[in-house]
Length: 266
Length: 212
Image 1 (spheres, rainbow over the protein chains, first blue to last red):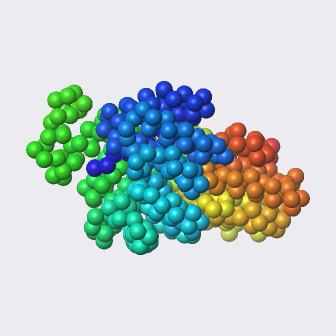
Image 2 (cartoon, chains in turn green, blue):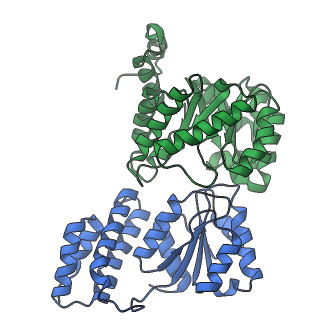
Image 3 (cartoon, rainbow over the protein chains, first blue to last red):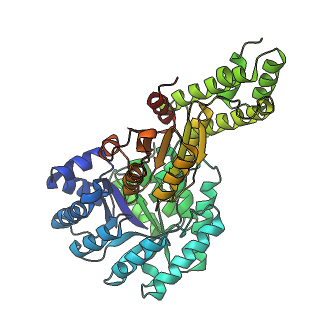
C-alpha cells in the first residue's frame, strides 16, 4: 500500500502562512511528522497561490527534499507548475494529476514522458464529470491506454476514480468502489489511488466516514491512498484492514505497530 | 386562513407527503398561493439556509427540503398566472470556462431558487462570451460564478472583464464562490461579493439587491 501524506497543502492556513514567510523549518517539521507516521510520498500543493504557484511549489519541493530523502507527490491541476516542479525534484515523483481534459492532457503528456515518474490519471472526461461506474472505468481505461502507449509503464499509472460526495448522491460511494474494482481487474498491474475526504463533503463526523470508506476502498483493490498519516485512528484502520485482506505476513506490521504503541484497542 | 407553521416545519424536515398535505390544507382554508409561497415555502427554505450555514443541517437534508418545496410548488403553479410569481431577483449562474465541477454550483442554484430568486443555470464550462450573451438577453440582477480549480479561477476575472467590455457590468452584481475562491480574490477581480457556501449565497445575494 502506497501512502501519500496530504498535509502540505496551502489550502490549509498554517501551510499557506509558512509558504508566504518561507518558513522552511515548519514545512520540514510537517513533512517529517508524516514520514515518521508512515508516508512513502509527501504531497505538495501550492494551488492557492495562483500566479505565484509555480515558484511556491518549487520552493516546497526544494525545502522538503533538502531535509528528507523522500520522493514527493507534485499536486496541481496546472501543467506549467508541474513542469517546473518536476525539474526541481530529485528522484521519481508522483505527478498529480493528468486527465482526459484535452488542454491538460496535451500540456502534461510531454512532462510525464520526459523523465521517470509516476502519474495520477484522474477519471475526468474531456467534457464532463463521470457519474456511473461504467463512465469511470471507460475514462480510466482510456487514460491507461494513452499513457502506456506513450511509454509509461503500467505499474507507474495510478488511476484516481474521482470521488464525489455521497451527500449529494448516495450512490457515489458504490460508483467509486465499482470503478476501483473494474479498473484493477481490466488492467492487472495498474494502481488505483484516491483521496478520502471528498466522499464525506456536506456531512457530519467526516473522519468516521472517511476511515470506513478507506476500508471499503482497500477491499475493492485500492493500492495507494492520499491521506493524513498523522491521523492515528485512520492509520490504525488501514493497518487492521490490510492485515484482514492478507497483505500483512504473520500480521507483522500490525503487531509491531501495536507493540510500539502506535495503535491501541479502544 | 390557516397557520403556515406546520407547512414550514414539514418543509424544513423534508417530509414531502406531509408538506403537500399542509400546502393543500392552507389553500383550502383560503390562503393565497403567493402567501403560501412567500410566508410558507420560502420562509422555510430561508430557515434551512440559515441552519445549514451554522452547521446545524447537512447537505442531504438541504436537498430533501428543496425537493419538498419543489413538490409543493407543483400544487401551486397552476394557480399563478404567467409571470405572476414575484421574484427576489433574476440570477444567471454557471461554472466558469475550463471547469466541469457542478456540485457546489448546483447547491447554490437550488438554495437561491428556494429563497425566491429566478435562476438561469448555464451549466459548466461557461465561457465569458456566453455569460455576456445571456446577461444581454435576460438582463439579470446578479451573475453568479463558480470555480473549483485554482487554474480556472482566472476565468472569473475574464468574465468580469468581458461584462465590462460589453458595457453591462454596471447593470449586474457579480458574486463568486468555490473551494479555492476567497473574499480577497473577489475584491481583487472586482466582483461584488464572495459566498463561502449555499446558505450564505442566499444571504449575500439579498444584501447585494437590498431585498429581504
